Image (tube, rainbow, N blue to C red; front, top):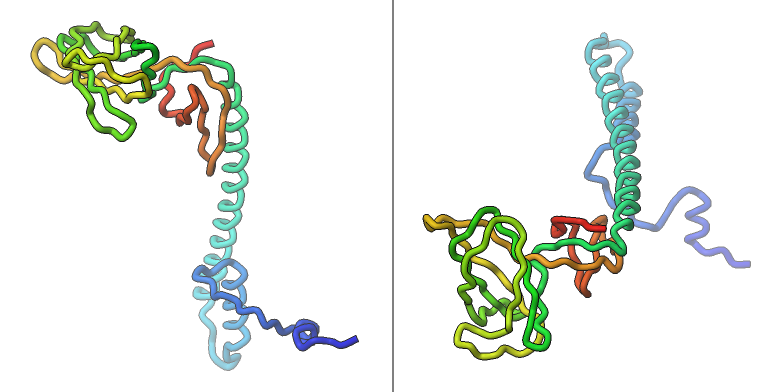
Length: 219
């Protein structure tokens, strides 16, 4: 049976594969340098014991840091697994999410708003799925907290908009004209939980939301 050159090189300890140089020095490389330094020292020359102690101390610290790093990686993997497992308990529950789209069906849509304080004037900005503003409506005053109202799907000129999905934002001010934090919210049922690159996403209403979008979890 013929033997290739690559098999011969592999047998005698050579390899044809190119090895990329490492930019970082691990503990093995440090130890090799230390051994090489000891082997090439001149026995006739007096050695500095303090320098040797410093080198051994540095090697010990490097080894300890690498061991700690490996342990932290293991702990991180375990924490991610536990976090993902706990997130699955959201399936089937109803959550209140911010930034959800509003669906206009049969010329009607129910919209939720959360206000940080009483608002004397609230404007509702309606946008399409590209972010283009379609209309801006004055919807009156609201008390602080969570409120819901019906929108008939008409623009500021009283024309009926087509059924579909819209984005809604609010601009709210108090009696003195100071800005009041206001956001559009929706109550949705969690259908499933997805995992992507260590991130947990909930699937509700046919869309993906991060856990940061959830502001309340219900039974």
